[in-house]
Length: 230
Image 1: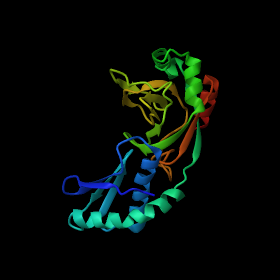
Image 2: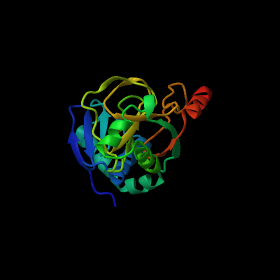
Image 3: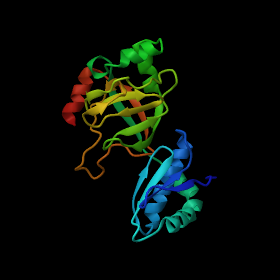
Image 4: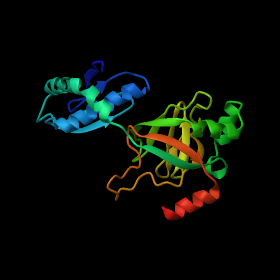
């Protein structure tokens, strides 16, 4: 059963619905079930829903609805969440990755941090199936968990100003992929040739919350072949 979330106002045009405070797949599924329920019900006055790991930020037009009325409407949706959550089955996506070298400059750091070899880090990272919890901080960036404790590594002390598109990183017990060149502080262990975000596509982002991801180690030659076909 879904436990009742906590509601709180966020300024005069948004409210926060919190289901918990941990990175947990069950909690995250509740977040996305409520987001889907709001969309399906076409709740009057709602302008946008922004899901995170354990909470949903709901923006609304205060000229069309009120905080109190919106909370009442969202509470009315709670009985539907379990059924909606059960239907939200994501895709299983295999992501090819060149690990280490110029593609993964922090692979050595991660291995050293855990007293492992680079091959052991690659094996552990690629044999684990990850769930996509949310998309941010730039378009198409998938936040995935949970990285096994054997390779979970803190962020860099000093973030880089430029991280190449496709870079695969670790930050604590999360793993993610940079869809475009951007600054960042994750430990970069490899790079994929896949395009993660295409604004002109019917579905711009390659990943969506609820998808499951497996990484597959490939060679530089295979990387180049896939890149040419992209």
